Length: 264
Image 1 (cartoon, rainbow, N blue to C red):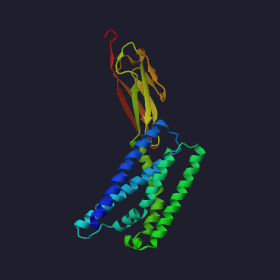
Image 2: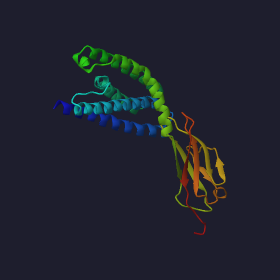
Image 3: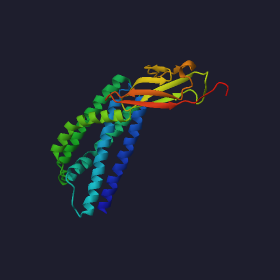
Image 4: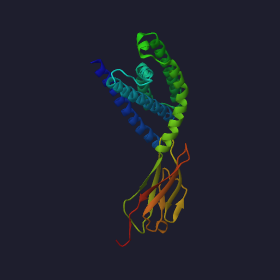
């Protein structure tokens, strides 16, 4: 019975952290596209990183518990330390995520948001240290065999890992959406093009927009770019080149045009 409860609890954590990671990913991409100067972006991105870390811990704990059951007690190296971190700190993480969600939804002036950010981070650190310190004096801590050197190493490695996390995801989700005012044009009609760079925390830089004879570096953000008939010449597509900001990688996107003769 206890083993089944352990599996259910680990599986519940996987579902919770996995769903929350997907939700925060959509939230960050939407805010990056619509409000790229939002001061809460970096804060929510860090929470997104923390959720992924706990999701990985939950997956490892679930896998190691399954291996231990199949192997009649054999454990994978590092299982006790991972379980100690996961089961010893998850209440703090849940409280932190709840507070961060409320903070991100509040419409406060920038100065108050900055104060709230500093206050929250300080509270998170103090609460985490206090919780782990109290846990160390209980039999639960001894049974979980918490590796304090590992925890101290994590505090050093987390900022570096978070930086790599931002660099990778900002490049992975760098994109640009291309829309036009109509689906079908006549040859004598101008084409209006909107280009919206999207991404994770950093929007990519639009380096080129090409439609037949029109070839410009105008980013056309938040306003339409008009392509007159003598420029598009019944072109079949619009090409957009863009470059990610964190790591200068170049990408391109195409949008197909349908232009019919004037007499149709």
